[in-house]
Image 1 (cartoon, rainbow, N blue to C red):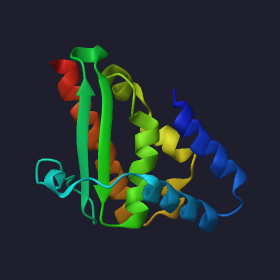
Image 2 (cartoon, rainbow, N blue to C red):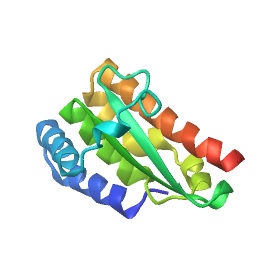
Image 3 (cartoon, one colour):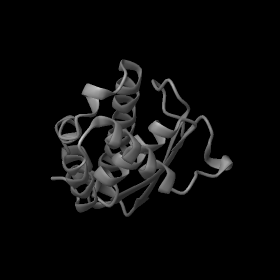
Image 4 (cartoon, rainbow, N blue to C red):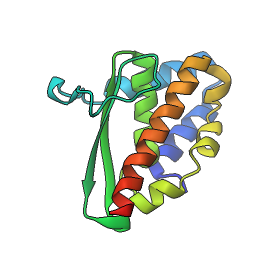
Length: 142
């Protein structure tokens, strides 16, 4: 159930020959994102469980399960900012019901991220996915 944007990332990963090139690509994805304004870097948007500073700002259009999930995010670490970009490609523009059905572990496994991230980064990525799912779940239950 991956979006076209995520499929494009997966195809690029297949094309790149080694993890160093993939790592650089993730960082470039992060650099291409607009930064989150300081006004949104607050405890309410901060993701707990990440070694780096991470903020996710949901922007939900509509109500209930059919509401469309958008988010913006940022981090003080370039690789984490890139991981936010990957999650953005995976989730942004889906309904909140679709967000809850995404097998994030399976989709991210296609990229081989867990094999090449430190345990702290993997835990942080998991925390970001859990936060996105929680935000979508709150809206779906509304």
